[in-house]
Image (tube, rainbow, N blue to C red; front, top):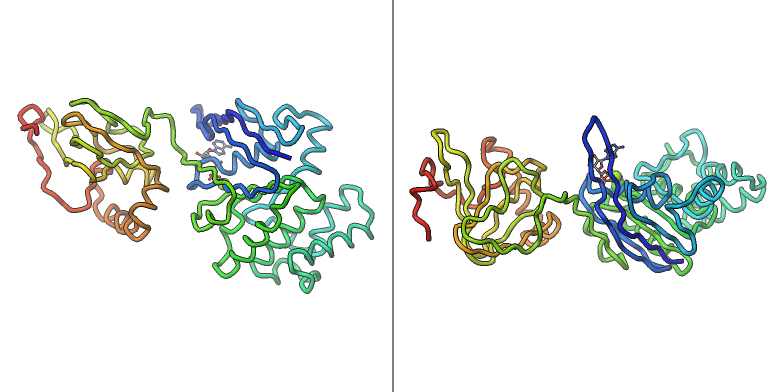
Length: 352
Ligand code: ADP
Ligand code: MG
């Protein structure tokens, strides 16, 4: 059974304003694949999984799984889809603390009408499959995080669902347990089943057959490659920033209104230099306006791409600096402090 997501858009309305959690997302996955939803917090991972699980109706767009038009399901068909087509593994395990591992796995089966004896046998074999036969009679409190997550996976497999969804299943696990859980999820992605795993952890990428990157980008008009004419504005101070930019050619200046009128130039960037990294990294609005000094080309990178380019250690340094210089413009932060052409008005500034 193949999974097709087409033009999926989810808008939440909260306190009078609209949050665009998913914006026109489309992808396909084939039976047997492990699909990774990769994105930072707030990028729409849980929202997408909720739509796949038919817990949430998207604002627009469709999902189909095999022959089932998931987004069109209602009534009994919807209940049946949730019960027998989808298995869900949550970030926080969601096990019942007063029940043993075996009981946690067999109780949903019994609630679904399976006899006590069959449910118990099925639960025991599922615990064996996740390597926890020897922990069947332990309560969650007596299990490690990784073991609890494996119980949760066994529980999700109760009805042998062809679509298994796991929402940041390794987020609360320490490193030694991450691998066991991942290997288990990997082995469950076999013909007849699609496994969808969300994460913000790029170390998981090599395990996936398909990576769907959710960047949390809002439609601010930013696009990846931009050609800018002299004087053209790339982004405005105060707008939401989701991309870090690299200058391919030309020159970009970052400006802010000067206290005495006009503009002050905070920094200028030339080829191979990057700018505008702190707004997307920290979720601030842009603190400066970026404008082309002459005809220029820039490339926008998502935070994930930027991280890959400069390395996590560098990011930590950048964020450390950001934390110690409060008033510093996020749009204009630069790697080596350079004297800004402060107070000089744009009009009088020589162009090059
Ligand atoms: P992730 O799981 O990747 O962290 P979510 O899917 O939880 O992302 O959230 C995506 C965006 O939608 C976020 O900006 C979040 O604040 C917003 N959001 C999620 N659920 C709701 C809700 N029930 N009401 C309003 N906004 C929401
Ligand atoms: Mg989430």
